[in-house]
Structure formats: structure tokens, C-alpha cells
Amino acid sequence: MGNQEEQSLKEEKRVEKRVAEEAERLAGEQERKKAYLAREQAIEEAQKEKGTRRSEKRVIEEVEQSVREQARREAYLAQEKATAEAQEAKKLKAKKIPPE
Image 1 (tube, helix red, strand yellow):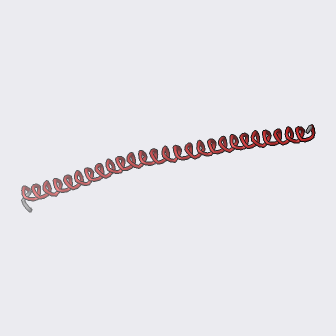
Image 2 (cartoon, one colour; image 1 turned 180 degrees about the horizontal axis):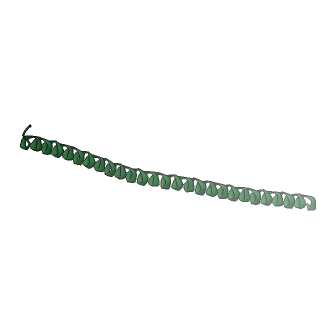
Image 3 (cartoon, rainbow, N blue to C red; image 1 turned 180 degrees about the vertical axis):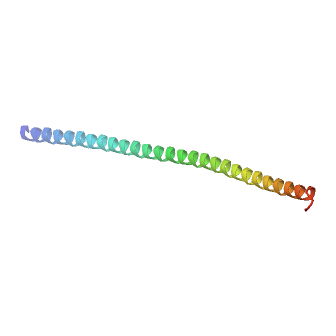
């Protein structure tokens, strides 16, 4: 029975070792999965932040474009008004000066 007990002890140690290795493997797998998910979350957050910055930049550019267009329209209208006033002044001047 000594031999059988010895084999039984060896088998028990092998089983314990296998269980410990399996637990270690699972713990390592969990750590890798946790690290992977953390990386994925960081990437997702970075992309979300980039999208927000792009949206903010686009809004600013649209406002700036609108301001430029408004200034251009106002300048055009002012020029048209000045031209019309100049033509009106010429007409009035032409009426007042009799031909010689």
C-alpha cells in the first residue's frame, strides 16, 4: 500500500498543480481582457473627443463664414447706395447748369 499511497499523493499533487495552473491561466486571461477593454474604451473616448472638437471647429467656421458674407453684403449695398447717390447728384448738377 505504500506504493499506492505514494502514487495517490503524486496524482493529488499533479491535480493540485494543474488546478493552480488553470487558475493562473484564467487570471492572466482576465487581465488581458481587462487591458484590451481599457484600450478599446480609451480609443473610443479619444474618437468621441475628436468628433466633438471637429464639430466645434465646424460651428466656429460656419459662424465666421456667415460674418464674412454679411460684411460682404453690407459693403456691396453701401457701394450700390454710394453709386446711386453719385448718379443722382450728377443728374441734379446737370439740371442746374444751363448749357452755354
